[in-house]
Length: 211
Image (tube, rainbow, N blue to C red; front, side):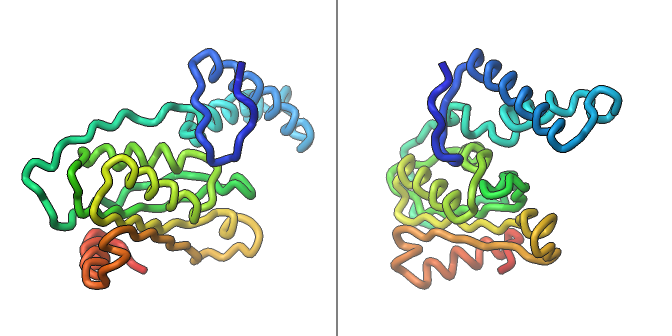
């Protein structure tokens, strides 16, 4: 049985049978949507398999972070007692706003002063993708990612900065072509120590971040 509905940005882990069942249900719903939009899915060769493609896209690709288990994260002891800043980024994000299901495309930068544990660099990208591959609003996704990293590695300092374009503003509505949104979460020394925060921002500027 597929779990009851939850908030759009919550994780609902499903097994393969449940994913297959959901994909069939979503395909049927997408087919009804296309007919309601007066799109002929029989005679129009471009639309004949659109509902199936939409279902696969939503369930198995762009919203996969809702239905997959969290990636396995192995933490290692900070054996050398590293206490300097290191940064990871930019990490590409692909999400969708929960208001219009329009794409959100952008980048994430993460800064850490380690505590007793560290994780491999690739794990930052995997966790970021898992959080953002859901219907989201950027502000909440930034906090979700920061909370998850803080829980897993308990760093002395944590910074998460997200810069993204929202197609709900570019593709529809005000149709503003040059707008983007920047959100950030600072924890530990990055929140309490202005010089540490300034050093973190300077480092990610070297990685391409521009406010």
